[in-house]
Length: 424
Ligand SMILES: C[S@@+](CC[C@H](N)C(=O)[O-])C[C@H]1O[C@@H](n2cnc3c(N)ncnc32)[C@H](O)[C@@H]1O
Image 1: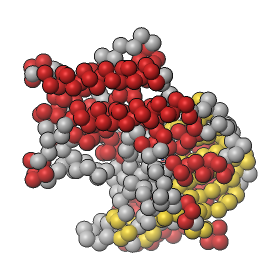
Image 2 (image 1 turned 90 degrees about the horizontal axis):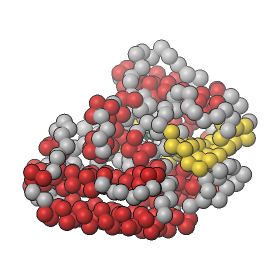
Image 3 (image 1 turned 30 degrees about the vertical axis):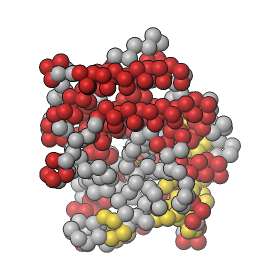
Image 4 (image 1 turned 120 degrees about the horizontal axis):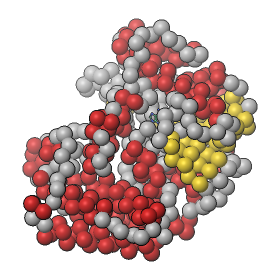
């Protein structure tokens, strides 16, 4: 496999703006950079009409399909409702004249109401620990913004929903930025007491700034968007999805790197936004558990048809059997996705997986090569090549603590591997 692995710095895109078009709408952990998705589509999808991203996140790949003239259909699957909301808004053009009229009205009304409102005038939401995560003034301001978004009364019901969703995405970013969390972290940590004392966010200005920037993007997007029909699926890639058999020409995706508890906590990152958006607290708190590898394997007896995975699990298991079970559970879940992807992939189609090889207990896990073995065990897949790129700008923790011992840091994620397979 080594011969097919090539370090190619032309995939680094060091100088490129990763927030082009609607890609800069809302932050999310471990986003794929649009330049990588675009080049994969151009290289391996020149004949493709149907794209799928089985771990869509906030929709980098499906947005690129929407911007490309070839595509008829793009499917995006994700278990996280915040990711689905952001992906929907990023890929849905709205007539700009109407959108800007309502967005400006909402921004002005929010400023006015926040300036005039007395405490008694507004119903405040009440979810667990809300006062721990937000200052009282911020809770009040956010409640006013949310109520104002709800009052949008565009007569066309479909456009009304699209406008509200558009505004809810900048509201969600405002929730995160105005909260008492330490920004720049994926997990929910509260600011240190000293920083908290100085924290007096201007909630309505944050909302205005985010909305204005996204409006500008939407104006250009209305002209750039192609005819591709976008299907955002509230489904789980481990199970049978609604995508028809042998219908997908190309997959461009970046799956999670491991279970959410020890790698990237998508659920925790999304929690405050989702609680404000009215999702059930209990469901929101389950997101990390229902992500790949969220429930550790009961023992180490199950094995998959990947010799590399088996030897890695053996090595980790000899040091720490509990960690080995957590790692194994991620690959058991991932293999269920491999089975499902194989069902809907068209023969001749290309699969592009952008992955990181993390380190657990000082063992680097070769996820790129494991993916090749798992697909080849499933059916006839040609391993075209694996491109290795440096990660200059992905929003990822570069150093983690692979032994879970504080202070033992190792720089595990400086490279990303783009695995290209073709179904025969
Ligand atoms: C690395 S992120 C994708 C980021 C995306 N490429 C972007 O640019 O925003 C991986 C995503 O996989 C999702 N995911 C985890 N388990 C899943 C499952 N069983 N089915 C579908 N999506 C899942 C997570 O919610 C997360 O959004």
